[in-house]
Image (cartoon, rainbow, N blue to C red; front, side, top):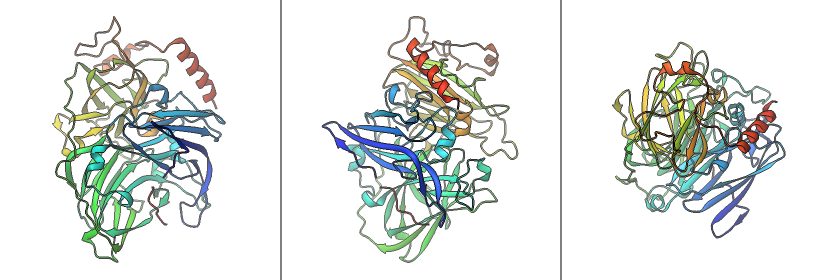
Length: 485
């Protein structure tokens, strides 16, 4: 858990240094990783709604970085845009107002074309935001409220962490340790599960098949608890679950396994050892939160995500000087997102896409016209779209005008350009027809045929913004759970 270096009446101020650090991931081996604050994964930041967090990030690495608070509602200049780089040796300040409901967020690198490897090498950490409503619920808390950051890796016999294809990443890590164990009491725990793998989905179940209760998704608490016996998370998705270990006698163990493991991999993720008894006054209420109503959309947009022969959105790769979508603060929209693949090709690992929007949370309306289940009906910021599938999401743009992005969060895809720019305006331009049922002159076109039009659409940034991004492109060349192995 990260402690602030100072406090004001309205803010907590933190300092973090991005640097190479040597850690033990696989027992007996020393591995060089990239860290925030010499911690792998990065230290957990706890924030409170209405109280600003200021993080001063110093880059002591040899690569460019950009820090994005995933799921955070922040001003554009603090969002960690792909071209807003922190150069080696520089320090950048990020301000997070925390004017949103409680949720399990995370911070990670977002430097264009580098984010997949930078995150793989260690630049990720949990950011847990609470609010008065969530804190008033009788859920497990304190030492019984545990973030679990799960990811894959490939570590050679000499300890080297090798950045490679996810097919060749057999080591499953939880909070920086390979397949660790965690000693728990025979009582209920709140487990905040993060999929921070750059390019892998996970499906988690207990080896004995016992159920658990999901209470939250990416954007915060669900309306009510949902009983599950398996939880699937694609890249960057999060879920909070409550597990009652009182069902096991002291001295027993239970293994959390990944049913999506490849045939060449072990399925074990984390072993829980029940070592003691403990009082437990926690419970999961039947009603967890009142979700905002699904907005009535003024604008409809359509997006096609392609994987082959190249990763693109609506036939285009990311260009920071091109506006792909233009909207206004307060505008409600429905986005229809298609996975262009008609089926999963044999041998393709990440044929699904994991679609993420910056600045806003959304509600998932349906998959192929069928309403989603209760576990997916809460507030989200990332949604999987499987081969041949069409997913509709609804959002209202706020709270800040400025430049943002949307992209696939399988990071190899976004690193290769499967990303678009959205400009959120404080008021509609005179030539906009935002009130129509079709997207205006944006590249979020309504059919595949529109890909062939080419050219640029929308407005680019201001002159100073263009100069800043050109300068960055020139540079481009070139309390966590104590787990034991």
